[in-house]
Length: 326
Image (cartoon, rainbow, N blue to C red; front, top):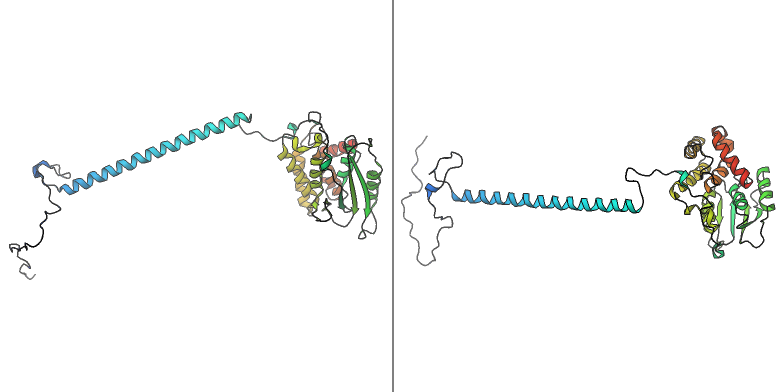
């Protein structure tokens, strides 16, 4: 290769002007080169840049501080988890839950009607209402509640036929005669006047409490929910232990009525059968709102699911029919 002369001579003296301040070099350190040891070779007396040592020390310190902060944060998290665990255990103790496992809902935990306090009926909650029902889907639950509450509350029912219904079926006529002829045993009992209008509304039986605003409550099961709140307190299912389980059964009865697909109805009926099990009723030994809703729903769609009703379901429906005269 070509040999080139040095571009700059190192021996050239640069004259510094005296009109400026003079500063010491920033990188100037006073150290003894023999006091340092090369970290790679381990040989003492080797000159090592002190800047590298300072940088290593700073990095080591930063790493130690970061590890210390991480350990402190982990300790705080563990302490918070321990406090949360103690709070959950105290709540389980207050709610009298079994610490070994979750409590499975069961219809056998329903309170007996005898154990529920029979409080006086608040007449301010009683108001007359109108029920629109189809003759093809007779609301048997109204007759059941009328007979079940005959010693506590009088459901006075009057029946009319809408112009869209040319003729009532024999089933609807028998129901109409039963619900209008059964009188309450006490004339001084609180009373709710129910106007039942036979109308082509299909399976969506509707209840109207305010004719001016016309906000209907759709579904026979929801009408039962409304009446159980304003009726006798000993029949209010919300005072029982497993309200969620009862609501799920009532919802299944609603779907059983309003699902037009036969396969869907069969599936819902099997679900209700599994909930009933081998018990005499959904409420155990006492007649419950679930038994009434189930019996009414099955009677309305019995022609499509008759072969899927097992003997225990038939026994439950028979008990309801005997008790409340369906």
